[in-house]
Length: 341
Ligand code: AVJ
Image 1 (cartoon, protein in one colour):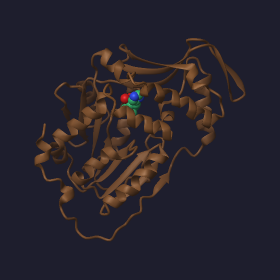
Image 2 (cartoon, helix red, strand yellow):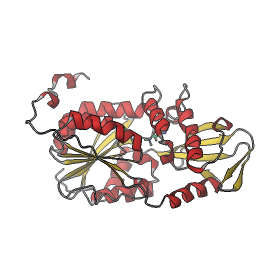
Image 3 (cartoon, helix red, strand yellow):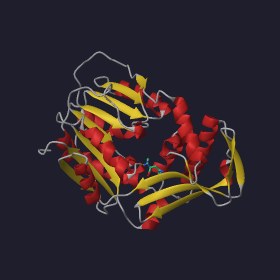
Image 4 (tube, protein in one colour):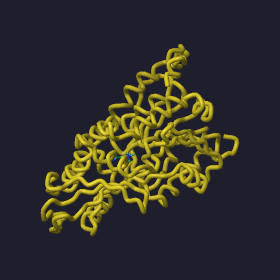
């Protein structure tokens, strides 16, 4: 599809002259109780089966590895979503409208949203993420490239609920939640999370969201267990991060990367499997990991498009549009709470 090359990129239109405002403040709204955060991490590690929440993947190295994952031949979601965005750009912009505030959930390096800024021309761009390094690197560059947009960053762990009352103004709001990150929630938590977004969408707003679809389990598995071993490194790096946070001494090379598709639950699971028996002192407790014992590090739920539309509707969205690639490997939805989407 070469259609996009025929269009005039709005970036090349001359913007109205305006004073440069290079503020790109990052506000920290992470959990005010680090002790509780630490306790939850410890509890997960002492439980059987042991768990580590996927948010702990994203230290600076984890963010860099995730960026590498997105470019792997086996990891189709990022590039498939980008192709849908590119092919359907005009229809999506027409559905959303321009000049609204744009809230980017899990913005990371803000690269995906940056593609939309010239088209959606938001009044305000709010990048929300748990990764401080990624936001602090990306936002000043965006502020420089788009002086006419009010650009802000919010550091928050929205896996524990979305409270953006302080950061979302009253006007029309577009939420952007790409990459199938919604797949990290259980379906019940996803429903609640989506419902939380509908509250902010009443005033002519909406949600642009990407979701990975159910497909051949072999392809799903390969996407999470690439030949180059990048996903394995990403998975093991969570132990390095945990060591830094808790002062533990996990040996990352003592654990094997395991990725599987749990068909009954429609989710890819990632685990770290102890290669031999090892004891790790966690908060003063000697936790024994038997050989073959697994730490569950991630679930990535997959949805048939119709299932996902039904979920959006149950969450309170009234009108949902869906765009897919020809192979139907991925789905992009735009959902509004009003029916004339
Ligand atoms: C960022 C949650 C969408 O589940 O595909 C990629 C994370 N984990 N490879 C996904 C991930 C392993 C990714 N999400």
